[in-house]
Every structure is written in structure tokens, then in C-alpha cells.
Amino acid sequence: MENASVTTRRRLPQEPEEVWEHLTSPKGFEHWMGPGSTIDVQPGGRLTAADVESGDPKTGRVLEVDPGERLRWAWRPLGSPDGVSEVEIELIPGIDDGVEDGQGGGTEIVVTERPSTFAVPWSAQGAQACAAGGMAFR
Amino acid sequence: MSRPPKPANQTPVDQVLAALVDPTRRQAFELLVDNSPATATGLSAVLGVSRQAASKHLLQLVDSGLASTERSGRETLYRADTSGLEPLVTWADQTAQLWSRRLDRLSEM
Image (cartoon, rainbow over all chains, first blue to last red; front, side, top):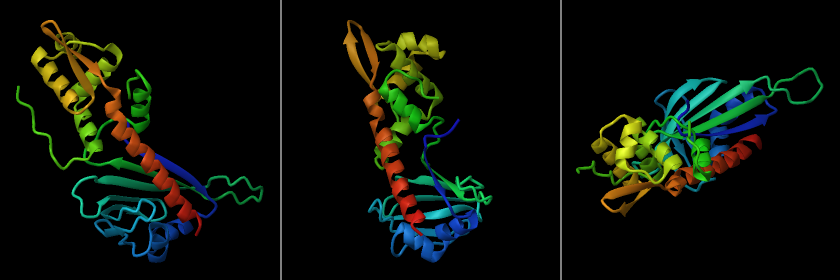
């Protein structure tokens, strides 16, 4: 069973090592999280995200680092004690990119975010099904 | 009946999750979804807890917006209110959209 969570997947043509570099390098992190964003890529390291997409700057701590494979952090809106959630980013290698070049390769990036205040063993999809009417969510 | 105070600093999502983190209370909610209206006595038998314990769980569901009550003679009837799950569904929708846009930016590199 999973906790209440949201998972987003994306296939990228680059190899995991290159995607990792984009994810975590100072220049890369700033590009995708917004100007001024920083991440200290080690367990306990500090994370500051401009988070331009939400317009809601965040602060957090890195929880787990497995270079090229997995990055996990907890974050919350800047200046707020609540709304803490945990983000896990996995890089899965060897996704067929559909090009018959004998190379294969590419990366599937899988991002899971879950509220970390309470561990509730059911999925957000289950909650939606329940809200749609009369289904137990497990 | 005494109830634990509701922490003031919880987000709506946290409040819904807090209500459902207890397995018995979650089961009570699931039962209500399928069997509304129900009484505390009726649910206590299915849950295997005392009527008092069932009442307490049901009142916490009411406090969290996941159930409503009505009187029927001397009895209190409880109904599931699945609209109480909306904060969670909204959070899930927004979170999925945000990650889709963040991954757009990442894939531009």
C-alpha cells in the first residue's frame, strides 16, 4: 500500500547521468526550479527553491542521495511551519526511445510527492474514486 | 464527550489525512460511504468497538467535514460526506500539474 501520494512520470532522451546533472547541478537546479534556487546534494543538505511554477518559494532538507538513481527531499512553503511534503525523484535507465538505432537508452523520471505530516495508507487516486462515489480506497 | 483539540496550524489536506490516519476511523468512513445513514450502535458492531468508541470516531469525522449528522427520534444518524475529501483531491490535481510543468522545464535543458 502507498501513502496518499501523487506520481508524475516523464520520458527523457538523455541518459540518467545527464538527467542527474540537470536535476542537481547548481546551474541545472536553478534552471528548472527558478533563479536563486540552491540545493546541497547530500543527506541533510539545505534546499532553497524559488519554485517559479507554483510562485510559492520553498525551503527544505535533502533526505537521500543516490547519484544517477534517486533523490529524496522534504520541503514546505517558506515561512510556514505546515504543509510539509516529501518528494522522491527516481531515474530509471534503459527506456526504449523508439528509435531503431540499437542504442535504446534514455531515462524515465518518476516523481512522487506526498504530504509527510501523516502516513495514510491509501492513494490520492483512491480518494478521487471514493469522491466519485461509493468506493473504498485501498 | 471530550475530543482532542484541532491543531490550528494544519492545512486542509493535513486535517483530512489526520482524520483518516486512524485505521478504525478510516474503516468507519468507508462503511459510511457504503451504508449511509448509519447509527453509532450499528457501526460499532461492524467495527468491533464499543458504541462510545464508534461515536467518538464518527464525531471526529464530522469535525473534519467527512460526515454529517441528523436526528431521527432519539437516534443520531450519520452520513458520509465525500465532499470533505475535496482538499485532498485538489492538492493531488495541483501537485500533478506543478510537477508536469517543472518536468517541462527540466526537459528543456
